[in-house]
Length: 437
Ligand SMILES: *Cc1c(COP(=O)(O)O)cnc(C)c1O
Image (cartoon, rainbow, N blue to C red):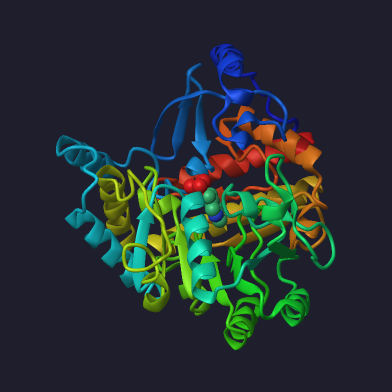
């Protein structure tokens, strides 16, 4: 019997604090991407010095078992030897040419083999860029302007995707960010995730104006929210019937939930797919692709313009190819599944033991845990989560060397580098953290 919660030593964080103060003088909010600043959990971010396997090491010498994995890409863990070797070798041959390479053909072929729906693929430098370009070609192909997205799905930070229409059925999109003209956002209609009736209603009203429906087939940016039974299948049917393109944003789920992503897992073929994160092996890459007749509209084959100085960058593409090779090894996804299931199970038991209501979601190595007893099926139900409590839990875990996302509404990820002992340590830490809430 445990008589008292373990005493938590307070970590030394003086260097991180000093760097954060400096950073705030020079960089907006001190960070180059907002969630890194810990705003939604309070406190100050840790400045990372290096990473290896499942661990991050900060500038004060603290180490953490990492469940962010750079927000998904590091599925092989950090500084995986094969990836580092590949990047070094590629760098020695020059870091960018602005001319085509064999590497790009190889990666495109590997993507096509994993995602047969991506008959043709264009490589870009980020997920944001890939989504933006996929939507442009969807509009070019259908000659329609409006797009439908789902509340709580994130598709990068391009203007018209930073829009949602608030609760209820969408009429006109309202920008979520200052600096986005209402005229741009008005072409973005939004409805709740998993709400097929809302989609049917919009299609009824907007049949001839909708270029595409875009979604994360497994939502990973409002915490993890899996698609309801038949949601994807019904979307596929409705879009096909109405000449609307279906775009799967698999920037997270691609090569994450299984080698062929959510579309393979659920057996649904979208018209266009967007990839990112894992396919760059930790370097900046995005990709979009789909049916030949759509993709052939892209310049120079067709009139839809899209270009990039560093697109298909040899370092990033090499890292991507090597990552995919490692993921192809038999049993990789099975082991990820087993470890993820064990972690989720242990966390669930720890919460239960402490009497903390927790709703868990998981698809493979994408894990969610919401501080609510309600089922989470969309953004409105995700928001029922007690975010203050999440913030407390986050800090209790961080103090014990467990690095979770500094926001309730992000996924936790596992890598092949997480060991059984890492998972046991994490569950033990969770027992202490839940108990202290
Ligand atoms: C991360 C992400 C993006 C944006 O990718 P960036 O590389 O950050 O621009 C787009 N869609 C989804 C689903 C993502 O998770």
